[in-house]
Structure formats: C-alpha cells, structure tokens
Image 1 (spheres, rainbow, N blue to C red):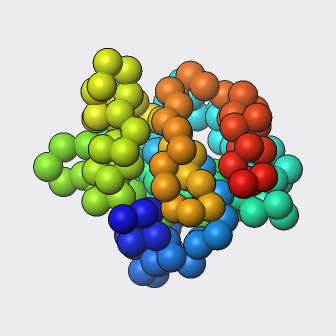
Image 2: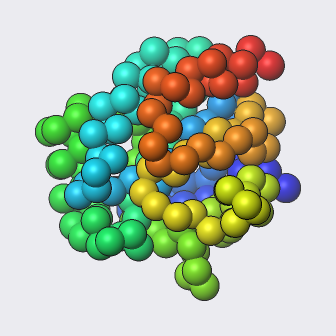
Length: 160
C-alpha cells in the first residue's frame, strides 16, 4: 500500500486520486488559517516554487480539529490562502486528521510514520509528511519545522 491508493476531494469539490501524483515527491500538510503556524503558508509556497519543476507537489489539507483554527468554508480558505500567501499548490477539502473520522490517508501516514514516543495521532496544525516518489512515507515533521528546513530531505527524495 502507498499514498497512491487513496483519493480525496479537492478544495473545489472534485474527487482526486492521489495516483495522479505517482512518480512525484509529495509534502502533505494539514493546514489552518487562524493558527500561530499559518505564516508557514509563505514558506510552503516558496518551497513549492523552488522544487515543483523538479517533481515536488505540496498537498494542503485544511483541518479544524486543533483549536477550531480552520472554521471557514472551502471558498473562505481558498480566498485567504491566495490573497495572503499566493498559494497555488494543490489544496483539498477540509478533513479530520485524527480520531474515528480521520481521513484514511492520514490513518495510513500516521501508521507509517509515528510521531514522538511512537504516538500516531497528529498533534497540531502544519504537521508535515514527506512522501517518496514510490508513494511511501519517508518522514514526519513537527509543526514547528519550517518548510525551508526540509529542503535537504526534499532534495534527497527528488534525487532518488
């Protein structure tokens, strides 16, 4: 099993198979508009601009499970991201990333890459999962890890 076995709704409501990203490196991030880490959208966009032509896709998954920090509609989220951060990497519809209603993609990724002390659940917004070109989880990075600090890992995955 790989991330390519999953699908999700885009932020505009279309069903999207992650198989469409086969052969690319992915950085999958649960995002929120009213979080202390929200300015990381800028860094994510910069990393995307730098590496998208080399085969990196960043996938943003809005989530309202942490402090109610993503209360808006998909249209609100799209507008916020474009106006404030110029986001043009793929964004998906709001999902749960933990608990009984967690999206199956997140259940899979947290099983493959547990966090500190083996804890599987995502603990906060802007947790990042790096996926290799083979669709397997390479690493999990904490919310405080800035996107630019992942460049060495991203370059390693792109070179494989």
